[in-house]
Image (tube, rainbow, N blue to C red; front, top):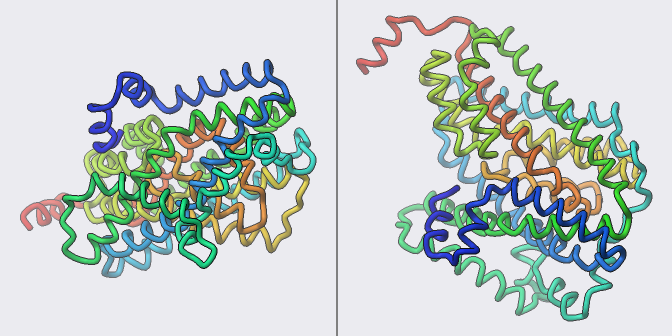
Length: 423
């Protein structure tokens, strides 16, 4: 939980304190169970309950482009790059990310989890919108699809007001932050977007409840049976990526894979429990230095710098999600479209902030790049809380792998360490 969230909790009503203090995964699990019950009881009448999910997806889609922009700009501005290791670091990061996406697409093409239960043509979750009262439809239409859209010729005043309110509330927490240079301006921009995103994540359980109830009520349990195959496929892909990492470590560094896993287990457990690679960074660095005994330069480049760019688990997940949804609705993605998924997933993974559920934001860009209906992302919300933790652990494992490869095939000599300590 971030410091900004803790400050809000201190002055919040009791029910809001309870809501924020309850782990996100527990809220989502409860939302799934309640959604199943509501859908079974209400039947077709549950369709309008999908409106909150549509609202969350609209906001996530609007946040995605600026979040990626500011995240990449800040990473490039603040990363201490330089020297002969820079090119090697970039090559390793891109190679790992590309391998993750190809593994994900390979598993999805072989297992084809989306065909295990055929859903047919895309159901208009907009059906919920047509069933909703006119004021609700008008409200959804007023929510901006992008942050820049409302400022065009056809901009809506209500959308501008919504953006102003969101940033006004977010910037209240940053109003005393000293802006001395361009880097500070970028930091404020990214931080304000992250604050808004954290607020959106807080209402994700409500969206999950609505989408589960509407799907169960209108279509039954067929889509969720397909999600079981999707989870199995993603776990398979992530395990293969982990195997790829360990092979790279065995062949390209002096560290032994078993010793590496034992040395960084605290970081991997923390990544899984928090679903945040950013929160795990200090632990990862400490494990690499104190347990694995990597050189300081290698550990800092991989664990601290690489973490800003290296989100292999997220890239694999987003590529597999796109292929899964395409299979689910009977849409064949050509080789060219799958290449587009690869390229978009690379960019999206770099821009994914190191906070829980951030992959959902950038996933909207991957879906739009090949014309997939973003409404299906709402269905993935029901299992994303678990897969997010799994892919975050893989993200951290990727950082660890890069550090080991940068350290080379010879361990740090005692006299080398003593010289560095004197410096």
